[in-house]
Image (cartoon, rainbow over all chains, first blue to last red; front, side, top):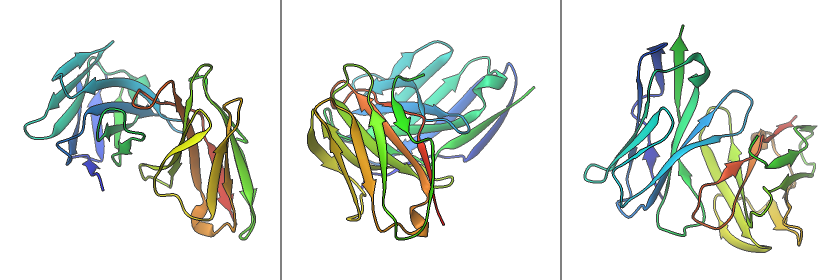
Length: 113
Length: 112
């Protein structure tokens, strides 16, 4: 099966600093990657996605970087705020039009005021 | 608010029982996905429906089944429940297969 893993299960950052959450994937044929944020007691919330024909995509305060050579994905959060504290999941889809996402185990981000 | 609704929010039942979880996708979305999340585990894909038809199956037990109705809402049926079935069950929807999925708030199932 697919394997999507995270380098660090927990990450603590000072408020205002930038956060980087990393994710490794195993299937070089994966075409679509997505980051979700899950706050306690809530469902995963879409943050940003990227397709394999891109290596960088920016959103509001977030940037996703894709390195297909080493099969690595990262999520950068600029000027991290207390409201960013949550568990972050990366997920991959093995091919365009695939039906489901394979999720990593998640990284818990804690923002220290 | 993602626009995906799930009911009930909480469900407590005994082993051996059967429950039905309900999901209404975002307006206009044709695909519905069901996921299971246990404790601090990641989300495990269970099953997907697209416009009323089963499209893909993941790690779904034979005791579990689902369907999508003509109005596009979906139900996940869990039978012969075991303690290990206690988990959060999420529904997600997307307009088409292969696009970003939007998740509902989940149903927390506790089997005692």
